[in-house]
Every structure is written in structure tokens, then in C-alpha cells.
Image (cartoon, rainbow, N blue to C red):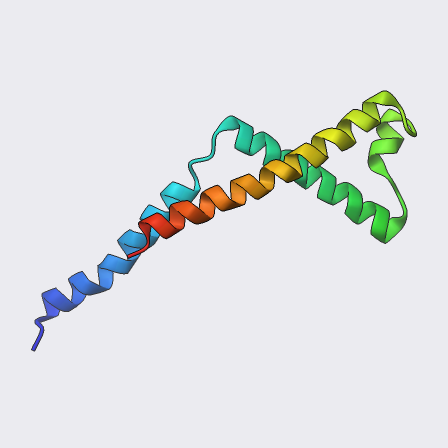
Length: 98
């Protein structure tokens, strides 16, 4: 029969593993963060277009202006990079799983 100390130690192991996973998942570089921010901006803009028929990017930079097209292109590239980022995070979790 396990002692109380052994039982407590076993209970703490999953907590250490989850903290380790959180540390690995939080290790994003500046390109990762820039992509996440651009995806958030794109998501907010598409949410506004869908819900209120209000295009914030076009309001800020002009309809079909070179600057608004640049913002759309950056959001698109960030979304493609987001696919890579998601697989990178998933592979980190797979490697650190018991």
C-alpha cells in the first residue's frame, strides 16, 4: 500500500508535466507573435464585415488602396504561417507527452 507521501508525489507529476507543456507552448519568437497579431486583426475585420457590414481596413486605408491591399496580403501570409505555427506547437506537445 502506498504511503501518503508517495501518493502526494504521484499527484504532483501531472502538474509538473502540464507546466512544462505550457512553457514549451509559450516559447514563441517575434515572427510567431507578429503572425498571431495579424491573424487577430484579420479575424476582427472579418467579424466586423460579417456582423455589421463594416470593413475597418478599408475605412482606415481606403477602398482598394495599395495600403489596404498590403494589409490583406500580410493577413493572408500570417494565416499561412499560422498553419506552420500550429503544427510546430502540436509537435512540441507530442514530443513532451509521456
